[in-house]
Length: 71
Image (cartoon, one colour):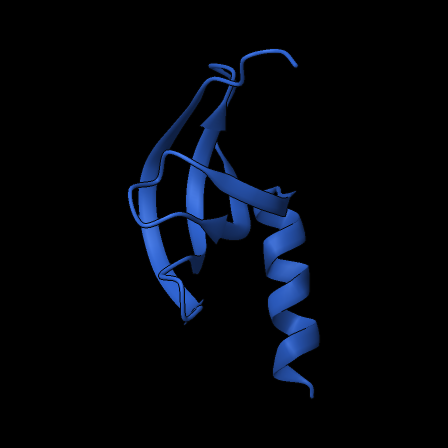
C-alpha cells in the first residue's frame, strides 16, 4: 500500500469518541501535499492511524450544513 502523506491543518471539532479512544473528528486536512479539504473520519488517539472517512470541498460542506439544518 502506498504511503499517504497528510497534515491536519486545522482541528475543527470532535463528533464522538469510541471506548478504545478513537475519535470521529471534523478537520481541515491536506492529503499528499494538495490543497486542504474538510475531512470527517475516525482517528487513533495519537493521529498516527485513521479509519475510512469522507473529504468535502468548502462548497460541499456548506451544502451538507444546509441539509442538516433542515432536519
